[in-house]
Length: 117
Image (cartoon, rainbow, N blue to C red):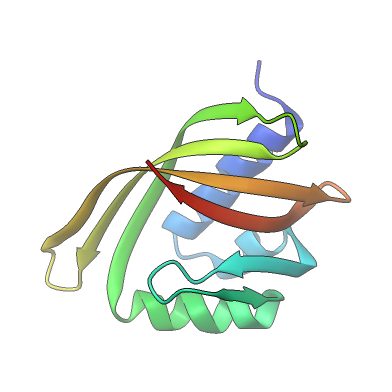
């Protein structure tokens, strides 16, 4: 049976894959910290994520789907995701698994980190 956090994660990834920024942001804390996967570093807050994703989607076409969940001893949730990234011409740039590590606050996403396998 999926946990509340797992259900939230599925909804966020569905919204991301559908390019529905407002729905995805509604499940994130106002002070969310988000990694800039292709650039390095982090951004903070809804408006910074909106700008980052909008710019990112003008350059690449990512699709990310959760395939496994693990509760970590430190209270974070590890998500194994299958990630496909294509350029705008449809050429495959990346097809593989990575780990997204989430911290929650007040039932919302507070921070996301990326670990490569």
